[in-house]
Length: 446
Image (cartoon, rainbow, N blue to C red; front, top):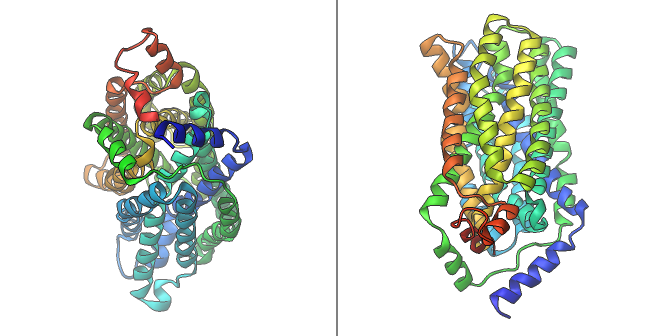
């Protein structure tokens, strides 16, 4: 069978994948992100448990640093599980990453406190965070590749948006859980076991996620070694560098806004109930951005969506943070969180589709996993710690705004330069209507 016939056969099989199976990918991805991101929302409580004031005056910094440590193993997970997804299949790679995430989240939830087992508590916490990072590093590439390959060419943006929507739904659920726990438990109970309950809720759905992923059909027609080498040879420096910059902007901005829960408590001195309400609005804003980006990027192209959302983000970030610092209240925090998250997620969804479409199918899982892992490890994973350090050293509560503005500026510049990958624009380009360089993208999508 020739490569062209093989590709055609595989695409014919992909078109018959039921929509429910596509949601199974996204739902499994959401469960992983709930487990991973819940840590950041309970950073203060985890700091009290594993880094008590009696032992250190920097419990929150150590807690955030441990959150960042979870990103160190992401590149390794991206390389190992990403390559597994290209060589064996997308489905087994997704199942493997999900099983490892279950080990990490369950172990973290059940680890005794510092007051119970001493120094072994933060050591175990660190170990389970490293396992979580490894699992999530190999999750994004195979799952995103699966959705792009399972989607009709004119619905790739929407299919990837479904993945982001379920991720952001998990953010919303995490916010609801945190809001409910913080408003129903005393501060001491939240420190001792309340945060553990939030993690155990995620652990309880691991068997359900495994069942969903194991029932998926495969989208990858396994390439031989020659095909992989040919695909790798198509990778050029330009899309790799620009794709990395887009993902850096996306992850930095996203994790910067995820810090809003801690920011509201630590810097604006609002109560925990109000702060966790910001997490709910974070999920709401992201969900709206997912829908807008998915639909619009399929209709008018990826670049216009990225350019408009990044530009409006640059214009509104500083006014939003000024409003929160001068008038700290639930209203200003919730309004700022909703608007900024909507814009950031609109940009991020279109950016992710662009990067995925720019990569050859035979190496898509590995390449996307590595790019995303590098972006999150070096920038996304350190964002919350860097923001806190910047506020400590400068004394300015506007440090998060400047950091997010920098990320958006990088994203906007990259979006201006990168080629359009939306099929609707590529087809037009093939008839000489758009940029003549754009049809080269068609070769990468094969």
